[in-house]
Image: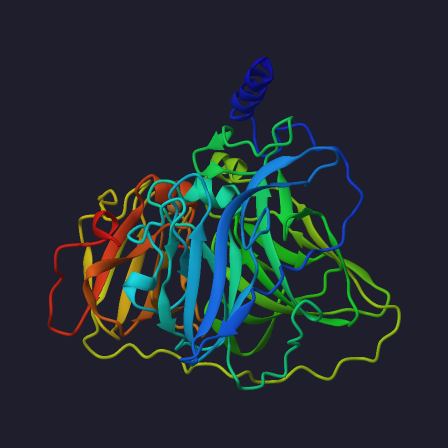
Length: 477
Ligand code: C2O
Ligand code: CU
């Protein structure tokens, strides 16, 4: 009991400081990067791709001599296996909840029927299995999955529940594509550890849980002993609140080839890549034989007041992953000059414009209500969403069942940073599955903001139809 008291006291004291507030974890020997295993998939008699996923509790070791209670998917104590499917596949995922509380599993970035989305309206009680089914109908992209129970998303994600969901396209890209060899997931999260090794859930900032230690695929400062000098890295910011400005330590640019929702029209040099929570980027890194280069996060200007930037850890320089090139290797071929991608969205004449005012913890002044439908979107619509951050807090906005482009750009997105006191206009194309009674979500992906009510609901309807009364959570099963 006194030990628990000590932990709580340290957690409480931590709130006062900034992101470097807890004692540094005991040093551990550098570990190799762990590549999440691919989830086993079977094809059933009707040709469906069937994947199994179990959410459960376990124990992880991140620090020397300390055990950390964690949650994970697929039998992993932390994180989750990588799910994979090809455009055109009919997918079934059997998600079993072995956790001691109700959760949900959301397929972030997937276009699908609302009942398969895994948002707050599809709860999975302990011991239950939820079996969503849909057809993958979007281009190749690095998507991910994580819990989405209303009010508890941050806590469930923070305990470790997050994994990648890769969508493939049969078309060749000319990019490295050997999973775990030269096509490597890099899932970046942050945690603060209590002295007993457990995750500190008490040391909160105004933006939620900001950790002092960065984990890459669940390890502290791991290295990748690569067998090839060209690597394609699939970056995911799975952190509750922390943002990363990812760059190479040797000053060479990253080559950006993809964003949240798929490949760019062409590879593009980028000195650095900013990833707010929930965002993904695919980058190509070419290394000189024998080189050792860190993938690093640099201080960011989030456009917020300095106290906010400090509490979000935006001033930190953090080593993420050391890339170790093989001693000798033939030089890689030139990168393709164009990539297979969806043509740019064109805003139709007379398109609907929706204004979302992002306040401190509200959208358009309203707190999330699971029984209220905020927006009604015609199936397949292309709309302009104008995101106005009228306050001083950094926010981003993620829209379910939608693929979009910031007006005038070509990068496919589903999660967009909206700096304080600024407006970002995004053209979104919505999915085609009408369901007037089951809502999709749009929300800030700083998870504490989402949990505090910075979320709204929309339904997708056949053109000309209206929304019905929300079914879901209390009527499921
Ligand atoms: Cu990544 Cu609504 O979630
Ligand atoms: Cu926010």
